[in-house]
Amino acid sequence: MEPLRHSTAHLLAAAVTELWPNAKPTLGPAIADGFYYDFDFGNAKISEEDFPKIEERMHTIIKTWKGFEKNVLTKEEALKEFADNPYKKELIEEHSKDSDGLTVYQSGGFRDLCRGGHSTDPKEIKYFKLLSVAGAYWRGDEKQKMLTRIYGTVFPTQKELDEYLTLQEEAKKRDHRKLGRELDLFTFSELVGAGLPLYTPKGALLRRLVNDYVESVQAAQGYTQVWTPQIAKAELFKTSGHYDKYKDSMFKVTSNYSEEEYFLKPMNCPQHTQIYASKARSYRDLPIRLTDFAMLYRDEKPGELSGLARVRAFSQDDCHVFCREDQVDLEVDMALAMTKEIMKTFGLSYKYRLSTHDPEHPEKYIGDPKVWEKTEEWAEKIMKRNKIEYIDGPGEAAFYAPKMDLIAKDSLGREWQLSTIQIDFFLPERFDLEYVDSDGAKKRPVMIHRAIVGSPERFLMVLIEHFAGNFPTWLAPVQVKMLPITERKKS
Ligand SMILES: [Zn+2]
Ligand SMILES: [Zn+2]
Image (cartoon, rainbow, N blue to C red; front, side, top):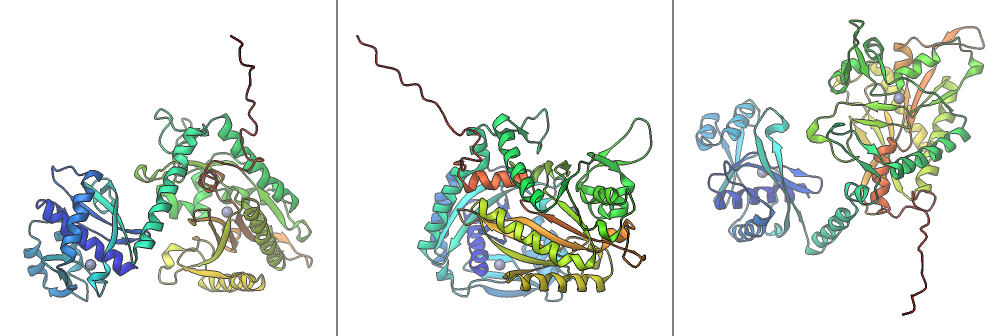
């Protein structure tokens, strides 16, 4: 699919530059559902109304294409060819150091700077559709120029294209931002701030029902609820490693009375280590299972905020189990069983992903590579023992542990990563957590992080769209409505 999608992006650029000769094509990759191409249209404004004209031109141009012919250029040749396109020039400067040289692909009369990966037969490029237009900063950088992004999709057959478009229509009808407004569940206020959802009485009830349900399943497994403050000293996050890895997405808080740095908490884990460390623990006290629904805050980029999908304030059903090594298997089995039960309640199908670390980028992780190996093997064994099929997620691990992630599928077949279970040896070490074992020796507990619905707020979005707003009765904020029926007045 990727070569087909990427090739269609070339075709889009060919049509756009014929129709708007001053438009400058920049980058146009294949993406999950299709492709996009970013253009600098100068002073020209384009909208979805221009799509039929562009699509028609694409259909005309494709008839003249025989293939994608590769040309290797020197930096000078490439700079000369793209002399009037500062974006391509920037890319040429960057890629001129690449070992495989600069390549320009030609199809019909259209040439584009590109690394390759095209359809072998342009006749395949037939069943495409332009979808939307949006603003996008050059290289995703807010300080750079705002470009015009045109999204489109393409499929090998008309049937697949139609199916996709029908699904998109249905998704649009179910959009949680639209339904959230219509069902009066949540709102945003410019005065409060972007990415900070306000739950109305009905939305707050729905949120509470989801939390209470998750809480009841957890309580049955021996979890106890704790509550931790919204802010903490930088020292806490420096010790956990969050400061080094996530400082840029944490909100800084200042005090009038001290020079100390504080942050709004992005995660519950570091605080929970301090509850564990608050007293001496014996092997008999373990496992200790803590749950916390306190709010978390992350300084997401304004351009990436979207409804409840990406917010700056949210909570997580992120629990932490402190246990002995010999208890890990049972604890993870229990957590896996819990994910199964909860997904079943909401009627979501799912698959698992084993997210491991990327040995080529050690700077992204903390801890000893040997421990990583051991933990990843352990997680694999647990999945196999539970007869869970899973896909591999290389490079998708958290910075402190591999993850057993659950990816749910909603009623429209869209995938959402929800649950995660992580076996962590590093945070207990960094916080110097201990317990006294049966032989009197001091040992380190293992910390298991696990979330089932992930963020209840984001889960609400999934539920709103999954049920198209028609919640099962136990979740519906309005369960019954009385309709007064009056006797027709006699005239
Ligand atoms: Zn290409
Ligand atoms: Zn955690």
